[in-house]
Amino acid sequence: MTELSTIYQLTLVAVTCFIQAHSSSCPVLECWFVQEKAGRGGGFAAATTQEKSLLYIRTDANRHSAETQQTPSHISPDKVYFVTDPAATLCHHSLSPPRGSVQEPQCEISPFLQRPSTLKWVAALTDSAFSPIYLQADWFSVALQGTNKQLGISSIMRAPTGTKEPNVILSVTSKTVSVQARLGKPLLLDCGFWVNPSSPLSGSGFAVEWRYQFRGKGRLVLAYDGKTDRVADTQEEGATLDFEGLHEKGNASLILQEAKVHHSGMYICTVHLPYLLAQVVLELEIVEPPSLSIHPSPLPLAVPGQTLTVQCDASGFAPLSLELSWEFKGADGKTRTLGTGRITGHRQAWDGTYTQSTRLELDTSKLDLGRGGELTCVAVHPGGTRRASMTASVIGFSTPSIEDSMAMVGVALVLYGLIKFVSWTLTSSGSDEADKQDKKEK
Ligand SMILES: *[C@@H]1O[C@H](CO)[C@@H](O)[C@H](O)[C@H]1NC(C)=O
Picture: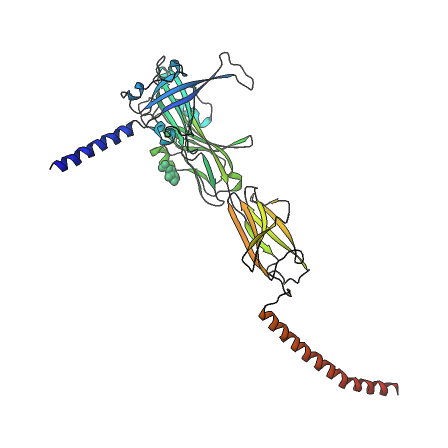
């Protein structure tokens, strides 16, 4: 009985410890407080100030456990905030790395200017009048990146004027801000959002917008007006959203039916609420390793001293980052490299993939290829290493094998027989010819 109660007590202690550890897993975030300098005008390099700030995160405004911690001396008490995030989005483990870890989450906070949007699929959100008094508060925008380099969060927070206790009103999250995908497969770009149900803005509609950007050029991929449940605009074939998941769970992930090379680039997922917006940026790279082919295949038999040209074509790959080389594996099982060969310029196919070749001059007299072996074309690509091989045989090599010797004896015998036969025919028919010749002359 005592044993049982001990076990019970230990379990209780363990559970309590677990719960404590769990509830304290919301991080204290050190963020850059970035602010535009007063009297901001146009100009490209908008002057900003940067200051360290500290964000204590909690999921319940009534729990003040984190506040007992000492604020580091290098942070002004003026820049310490106590953030309430009921959805615990900011409590992701990737934002609270183990103590002493080199990787730190990236965090930036700045004042947020709320305003109605002029975009046509967002404008409807501000049609209905609601108390603008709610907007009269201190608004902040926080952008975070997890230590795993895959988590991206952007939150809009509201603090009653003059307090340092903002509440998260809107969070937009992506669990995969850096995506690599194969060609031709369906593709999902993760994006989700959460709206604080206690905010008057919740329930007055939302809009989702996906934009694409590559080398400074941008375009709209898809815009969805959640208030009227309408796809306002779509400029990318095969791009869609999971509309049910969007309304039920805030799943704003972009679905691309078939990954193509031209999909590589930056994607911005923006979620609009009336007067507010938050966005996360994702990077997509389509990575497809090459297909290899060698020709001529099979390689014609080589005689010592002969030079053969072999070509290896790598096709259908992206991005344009390829290292081609040749290897030779002799009969002795040893592999050695034959260098890159002569690499041709690349060509781009209609689908955006690349083609590149290498040509190898195989000089059988210079290269000690022995009796032959296996010739391999090696292609190293970010999408993986590919190899294509074929057998290369050299005949008449100085130390022929038993089979070769037997074959040679056989050939010699046949040749001997042939010569014998031909010379016999010639001598016998030679006299006939002479007779005919004689008759003609007569
Ligand atoms: C979002 O929707 C897509 C498409 O239906 C689904 O594959 C994905 O798992 C969903 N994500 C979440 C977090 O539910």
